[in-house]
Image (cartoon, rainbow, N blue to C red; front, top):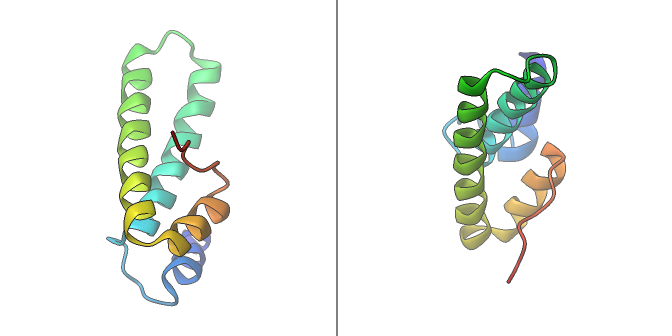
Length: 89
């Protein structure tokens, strides 16, 4: 939990706003990593796989929104979370 607080401080500039788009992206990334490791040991768990797909879609929508609204924060959030950016058509 301390790591989550420090990431929030880095992303949002010290603001403890967990509802911000950047912090939501970080928390979703954390959940996605946990579900991915769970699915590696339980490949037949289709309910968790469905939940993973829903989380991936939600994170993608948030990334699109953030890239349109604040490109600097988007780049920082993507780099800090360790995810690659969106593909530009």
